[in-house]
Length: 140
Image (cartoon, rainbow, N blue to C red; front, top):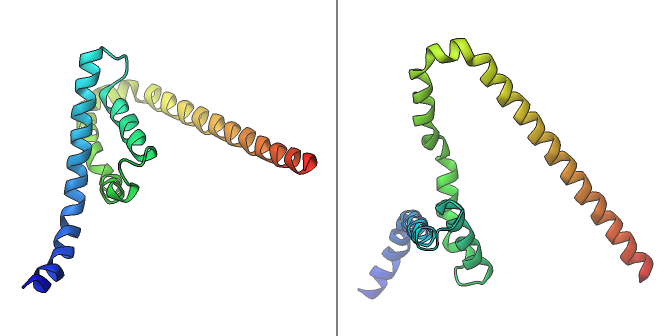
């Protein structure tokens, strides 16, 4: 009997792994929301929740593999979270016809600035790492 249950348990645990991890994320968000309200923090609860999750992982209180499957599932289904925003845009078709080019221009400029700044930061960090390695080799 025990062997039969033992063989059946892993598939059941695998099926429950993602829902349990998503519930863990929700509980972390609720705890973060309470902290933000209690201490009047100037950060949104989702940022505080992510910082709490990061702290739990870095302090090895929560193993990374306990949250990996849930995060992969949420990332894979991320498009579902943007569907309401896309549907809302359809309601403002007249606004898009009149002001759409301005919105597109702002999106294009902000995207280019983000890509440019990200490229500069990555380049600077890469150059710093090379400089640091050369310095270590020279000092050694």
